[in-house]
Image 1 (cartoon, one colour):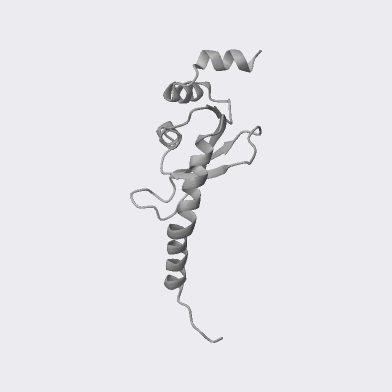
Image 2: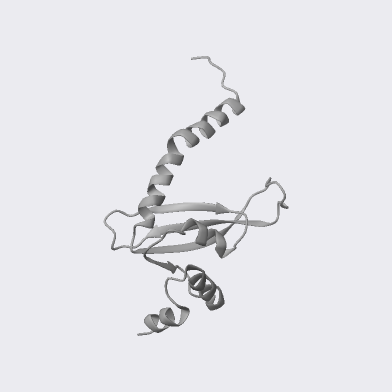
Amino acid sequence: MGAELKRDMMANWIIRSTEYWLKPLYEKMHEQLLKCSIIMSDETTWQVNKEKGKKASSNSYIWIHRSGNCESLPVILYQYTRSRSGEHAKNFLSSLKGIMSPMHMLDMKRLKELLDAYALVTYEDTIWKLFL
């Protein structure tokens, strides 16, 4: 067609589309996720090269929160955070009525901190149930 589209114009279209269309959808899915009886969460490192206030070599994190297999429709949401603090997951799942299960069980100290932060089940109860 011969129309020239500048890079910043296309970037602004993506940003606006996200704000107007995807953010409300994400928030609705978040509401639905919080109604689930079981939610699994995990985080992985994510390097962001030009993040304000952080070195390019430092890590940021992407959390995945998903519904359990027993739910009728799966809900899978990603959350970006600047640190690995369990406070991010705690805030994201603050109105959760069900059970949160970390997807990895390697770091038992971290598991205890997360379970204690949610105050949904105790660390000892979880370990007991895992080995029954």
